[in-house]
Image (tube, rainbow, N blue to C red; front, side, top):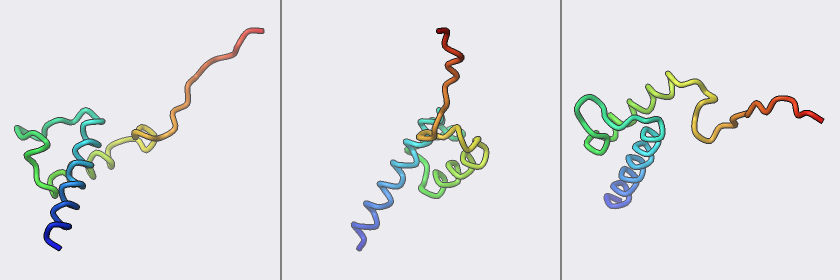
Length: 71
């Protein structure tokens, strides 16, 4: 069980780091993301989710204004 738990923690940390990087967050204070604990990464990501507009997230639908086409 210990190895499975370690792998799950490692996977979750990488997932959170990638999500934060997509939002141009590379550091917290004077620490790089890979130096943060899982709890610190979760806190930072939850703060980001709370502060972000729900439709600005990666993977959400983004409409493009094409204007009227002339015939």
